[in-house]
Image (tube, rainbow, N blue to C red; front, side, top):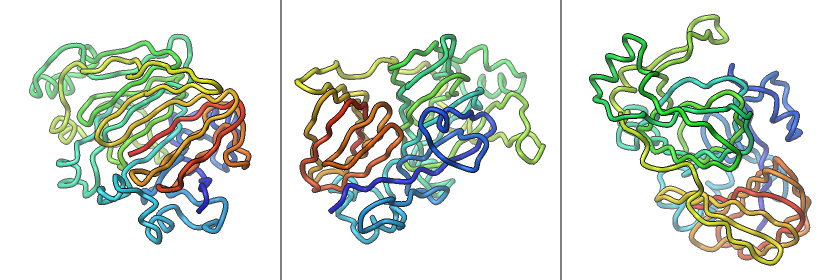
Length: 315
């Protein structure tokens, strides 16, 4: 059984920049690398395995042939449970919202989208939209969209490196310009745009908005969570770790290895390892910033050495 190294899938959305190429060394013919889909079995972009006996296969094909790689928790989901991205917002993203499972499965025939953002880097004055600054009714939200005043009621938050935002389905949100982040989300690509600054798409036409659906699913209230990681930083000999967030869908930790670390994938879940800084080795194989690794459930213990930072995700 191998730890699988995955080839990212890149998206060139109009708001993206070049940091994923310039700082992570990714190669792509696309001019803009807005998103790198680092762990994906979604039909809109599937990872291909780069090593071992499954080299050249999609991760979906590997999982289909080896469902035990998901672990007991992963098998509970109808589809592969999560999608992990790196996002480079050179410009503002649209103001948007995602539906919950009930609405999305009924209307879109895929999961809803609860997600979290971990801020990897940002400009000094960067900010984002995170829910509302006060409770309003859906009727008031609809009226404010119509008269173009709803931005007066959104919660704008200045961000800094290391912030953690838990974006529950139904939360109005928008990543602001100058932010580089890692996103861990449900395996869904359903987004309802509320506002897009009047921008034109690649076809020269205004990008589609989804006002009625957005009004259906938006929780018009301030966010219930803060912007700090949920757990305290725990330091050990050779490494440190910190719980970023945990919910019924996924748990996310930040691991910083300064010398060596022993991890484990048990029968409950696979482990996703997203390298965000530095370089080192895992079980003797070189890994570096930008690498995405899938550790199958029941793999057992693995050893990471080097000077390296990793986002660790389980379901």
